[in-house]
Amino acid sequence: MADTRRRMWSMVGLLAVATLSSGLLTTTANAADPDTSETKAPPIVGGQPAKIAEHPWVVYLTDTQGNQFCGGTVGRVNKIVTAAHCVSDEKPEAIQVVAGRESKQATDGQVAKVTGIWVHPAYQNANSGADVAVLTLDQELPQPPLAIASKDDGALYQAGKTSTVLGWGATAEGGQASDILQKAEVPVVSDQECQKAYPQYKADAMVCAGLPQGGVDSCQGDSGGPLVVENKLVGIVSTGNGCARPNAPGIYTRVSTYHDDVQAQLGS
Ligand code: 4AZ
Image 1: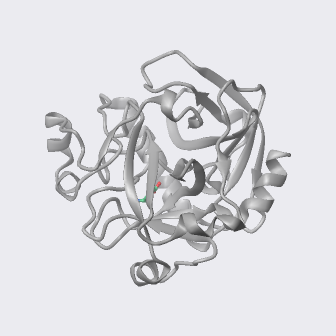
Image 2: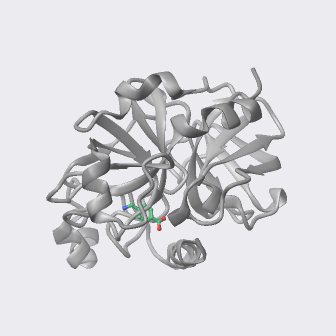
Image 3: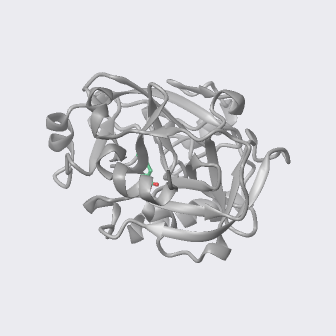
C-alpha cells in the first residue's frame, strides 16, 4: 500500500510539471518507451477516449490543489466508492471529488468536498484485500449511481467476460496521466490464471482482468476507479505488477464480496 501510494504521489508530482497527454492505457511498446507514446500520441492500443455522458457515474479524486490522484464511482448521490489505498491515509478535507467532467482542463460538472471517509475495517494494504472505501460528500450529485455487484452476480465474474475499466490515470507504466477520460475492455481472468501470476492473489477479495499478451490495462492514477460488467460495478482498480505487461493482469477489488458492507455505507 505504502509503495502504491508513493508511486501514486510521484505521478502527481510529475503531473504538476508536465504537459498532460491523453490516453489511459498503454502498450508494452509504450511502456518500454513512454517518450515515444507522448510525442506520437497514438490512439492507445485497446483503449480509447470515453464520453462522460455514457459513464456519468465515473469520478476522479483530487487533492486541494486539483491534482488528480485516483478514480471512483458514484454509489449513491452523495457517496463515492473507491479504493481504500487511495484514501486510507487521508483526511476528508484533503480530498475533492470531481464528477461530470470528462477533461481535467474543463470546468464543467461538480466539485464536491468530502465530509467522511469509511475504509473497510479489514483493509491493510492492496496486496492483502478489502481494498475498498466509501466517501461521503457535502452535496448530492446529479449523476446517477452505478449498481454494485452482489453475491448473486457470480456470472459477471466468469473468466472471459468482457469488462470495461475507466479512468484518467497513466498512459504508460511510469508515464503521464491522461487529461481525458479513457476506457478499455479487458476480459475477466480466471482465479487459477490470476493465482499463477500473483502469489498474493485472494479469490474472495480480488478479481483479475487483462489479456495474456498484455497491452491493455489500468495503471497508476486509475486506482479506485470502476471495472464494469453489464452496468454493474464488479471491480475497483487496486494493484498489479506494472501496467499492461504480459501475464500480469490488473488486480481489482472483488466488489461482490464487499457488497453488504459497502451497501450499508451507501444506505438503502
Ligand atoms: C497503481 O499503482 C496501480 N495495472 C494501478 C493499477 C495497476 C497497477 C498499479 C494495474 O496505482
